[in-house]
Amino acid sequence: MDYQRCNWTKDDALMNAYHDNEWGVAVHDDTKLFEFLVLDAFQAGLSWKTILHKRENFLKAFDNFDYCKIANYDDAKIASLLLDAGIIRNKLKVNSCVTNARAFMEAQKEFGSFDKYIWQFVNFKTIHNNWENLSDIPAKTAASDAMSKDLLKRGFKFVGSTICYAFMQAAGMVNDHIVSCYRHKELIQH
Image (tube, rainbow, N blue to C red; front, top):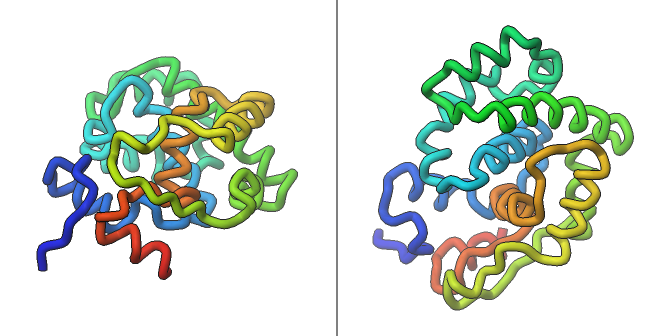
């Protein structure tokens, strides 16, 4: 079957699979939420395609995004990550991953789970937008502004409003599939 999808995938096989199976799907698993937090931070200044094509390398390098392990990374582990050509070797981003793992666990302690903390910014339900064109989709919103401000206050790094909005899209907090995309309606019905 030939489905019409959002054209940001550029018919790249990995991008199509991500679009069709993950983007906009509500995530409530803390490890998966941490993964998207990490990947969206690494995306800053880069394309999602670049990150997606390195995702398997990130999984291996960062212990399957086990935030408990990452929170305990020492200087030697960080140095080894900065030598790993399979990931983005940006010292600030790698260090932020460790910082964010620690802040993530603090949020879990306070709220019972990171899921309970982060979904409060959309009143615990997906916002289904009705964009006609990709150009209509905002880079940030009042909700991502509030999320960013609160995450920064809690010590998170690389969590500006634009990164937070990309995270919200990835974690299904918002459904930003354009209305002509077959996934838009599927996600509303789910």
